[in-house]
Amino acid sequence: MTTEIHEGPLQASRTLDAPAKASWREKRYQRRRRRVWFEEILGWILVPVIILGCYWFLEVGLSALGSSPAAIMEGIEAIIATL
Image (tube, rainbow, N blue to C red; front, side):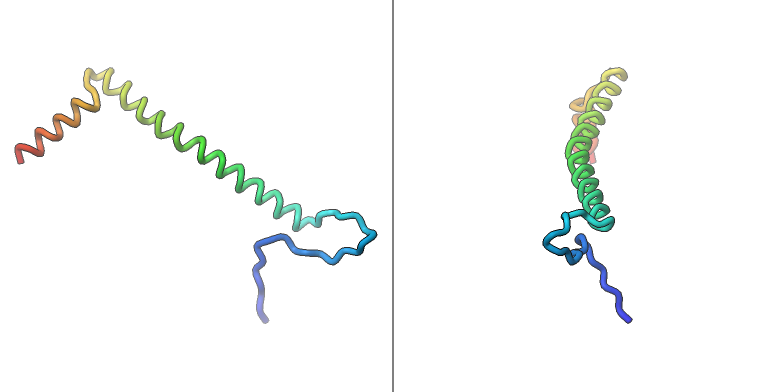
């Protein structure tokens, strides 16, 4: 006995005079496709926002401590130069 996994919506046999109603499997497949698209679009929006927010938080935190990313990079370069 074998089982086949089908990713797309199942095609039901329809007669010509019957209205085209989606089955529960087709509806589920459509909901899944919409959710995947929504998550993809949300990811393209949220990832840059999160990255910029982290950079902004780092800038604010370092300026509150009286430093900057440039000063930290210069310090790291000075440490590497002495090694």
